[in-house]
Length: 118
Image (cartoon, rainbow, N blue to C red; front, side):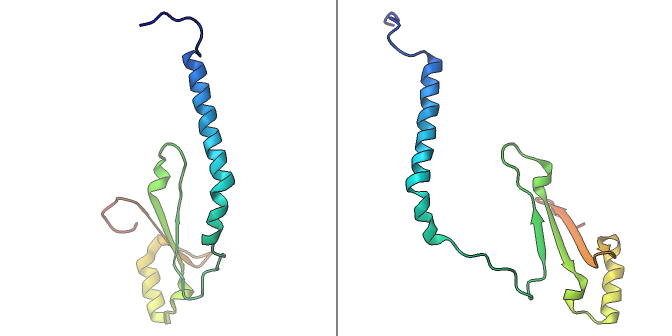
């Protein structure tokens, strides 16, 4: 190996320059490439009245979190348009998953679980 003549940056200096290059690369993309994505933008449309099921899940950036694997399904029982007998049987089968105060059925399940919704 040639002798170090103190004419080059240290490893920390090279790492700092690499970080600066990465930041500049993302700034260039923000400046020149992101505006091109406006062509694909769609206006928000509220769910229609026939879309009665709601699904909720969480995403955490970085390391994994146990909540990420959970999916929650909720539906207003009145939106199912059941008659009185059907509604009564449905509520008996729902058990504690039916919330009286919101009149909503809420079921949750972890992703990757092979069983039924619990």
